[in-house]
Amino acid sequence: MKKIKYLIVLLFIVFIPIHLAGDALITLPAIETIKSNGVSVFYAQDTLPHCTVYISIGAGSLYENATNAGISQMAALVLSLGGSKNYPTINEYIDATGGRYFVSASFETVTISMRVHQDEAAKAFLILADIIANPLFEKHLTQTARFMLKQEIQQKEDDPMTIAMEKARQYVFGDSGYGAVMTQESLDAITVADLEQLWKQYVVKENVRIGVITSLNKDTVMQHVAHLTNALPDGYDGDYTTDMEKARKNTSTKRIYFIEKDIPQSTIVIATVAPSIKSNNRYALEAGNYILGGGSFNSWLMDEIRVKRGYAYSAGSIVRMRKNTGLFLAYAQTQAATTLSTIKIMENVLADFAKTGPGQQQLQWAKESLLKSYIFEFNSLRDIVQYYMWLDYNMLPESYIHEYPDGIVSVTCNDIITSFESIVSGYIIVVVGNKDVKQQLDTGNINYSMAE
Image (tube, rainbow, N blue to C red; front, side):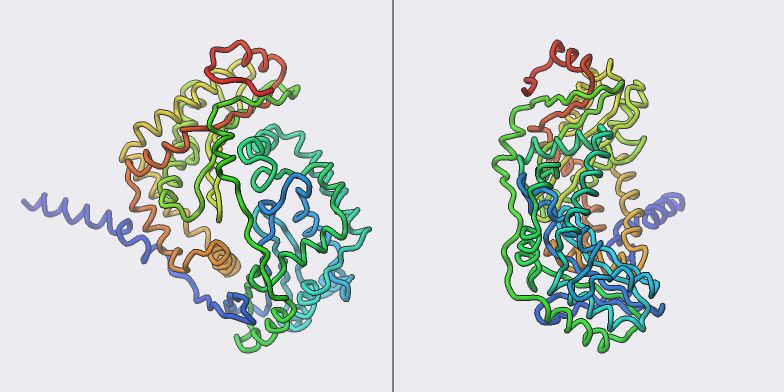
């Protein structure tokens, strides 16, 4: 009887961290959410004598199409090189004060960041306000940025995995949104006027979020922030859109897209649509993907392709769920001779995973791994403030910080099966390989057509 009681107590202790995950897993420093002229501002007080400001604008590559793909990256690079009309030598000022200034573009945002000593905070906000109101989109800076981005494209052409994943996005989503891929031609078509129009269209109060981490008190900071938000005009052109009907049609008939490249190995990517960040299947897809291909050597794809057969240099899967849509990718790199065999293994693994799901032990392993790694989203105050800005962009509540681990804990094996049924119901396959691979695919026993 004592042994039974001891076992019950032991099990209770073991499972406490799981059941209390959302409340007990993390305790974050206070982040204040304040409105300034209608703009969301996320403020965190630090002990170090600095002022770090982030301005996040909803305008990344998901807002682009085939004709202007790369415009967000070009705008970010031009502003990194030049700054604003009244502060054209911004980088000289930053270097002289030991600060940091950077502008970057991602799938969904363009972000301006500046970090200075607290004594330079007032000047920093004046400069940032001028970048908002008077961005320096000059011809010579645009030409420099165009050249640098073309160099980036050339470098990507040497990476079969990048080629395969970019093409997979295009074949799933078409030439806009997730399928918009920067090319030499699209960069050549972008003018100074296009950059100015981009700025006018998206840099408005309703489409901007600001994060501030500083040793300065809140009242002082908000006085500076008011100058910045005053520089933003009213208006919101609208969110990016995704033609989900077209994407599902593109993936309804399984098809292989072959890209010839004179290399000894093949890169294989299976791609399809995933739901948005607000999907009810969000947690099941993330936990399931970790087991399928995100969990290194313990994942199904790695175990079947590399560990058991030694076919692949790498194998895995990725699921990205964003504000309005998502993308699922399974990938492998293998010798040319084993390309067709690897494709068939990948498809069988996907089908089996959606049919049977993982075992309870695997699910528990995935949950523990995801929960333990979750804390690394919040390594610093900067990470935390940017996470709050990410929540606001995606229209997720601040309580999501604790809801996420609870959501992961609640996932069952049946949830994973249900969520992956749609993943395997339709997809496309991209193969980057040499002429021998093409012949192998042409003559192989496959149930779908090769794309022209």
